[in-house]
Amino acid sequence: MKKLFNPVAHFDERILLGAGLASVLVAVVFGYLFGFKFDALSHITYANKDWFEVGLTTLRSYGIAIAAFFLLGILMNRRTRFIDILNTVLIANVPLVALSLIQKLPFISNALEAVLRNPKDLDPVVVSALMLISLIVLPLTVLSFVLLYNGFKTTVHRKEWYHITLFVIVAVFVNFTQFLF
Amino acid sequence: MKLPIVCPSCENILKVSQMKCSYCDTSISGSFDLPVLLRLTPEEQEFILNFFLSSGSIKEMARQADISYPTMRNKMDDLIEKVKTLQTV
Image 1: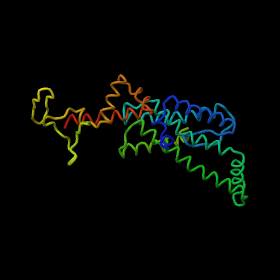
Image 2 (image 1 turned 30 degrees about the vertical axis):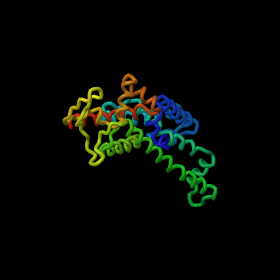
Image 3 (image 1 turned 135 degrees about the vertical axis):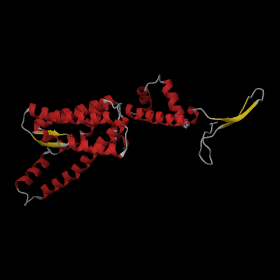
Image 4 (image 1 turned 120 degrees about the vertical axis):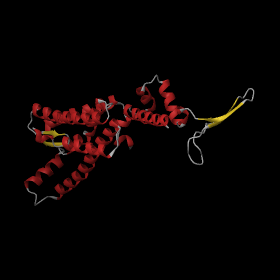
């Protein structure tokens, strides 16, 4: 269980990097196929079927988050390694990449569209699909944040309250970078 | 037999009060501080020994312990802080 919530503390950096890069690739390829992009680290939005738009926006979101957390890490502990921050950010977003794919499952995608079309008169199947997705969204979002926090804490090795506060500020910032562009 | 370093009653660091030559039975009495390394727990002493035996490679130690590099480095940093504190006491 500890390994699930803090892989950065237990797994070799090359394994994490491989898994993390694979998840980015999945995010870009499926983003292109299904028409979504990560316009901030944990923010998924609709996109045109355009490699450039999906790829650039998604990679930019990851890049900003990695740079922001690396700068913060260096400020807190000058021995912070780039590879550990890189792995932390990539692995933390794996649950959200999975979530973006789950949302594209036909019956869930149809349910979401049905809500947009007519939110007052919903079919029981649609309601079940919505309940299912709400049961999935929260745990995966929490898991993503837990992975980010644990990974950063392990990498930087600082646990004072002001370190945690600065981490939260940067975490909020990287989740709203869509407003920068 | 493990060398006790902490008083079982008050938990303060013990001192060496007597040393004896097992060959001629000569005894030396006094109040000697334990060296810093002996004031560490057996696990911490083993950690330092492993570090030495792996030629000072934290990466190698992490591989042997089946944990990641940052976790091993954090253990090392905590131990360095403890040794620094013991040196000033």
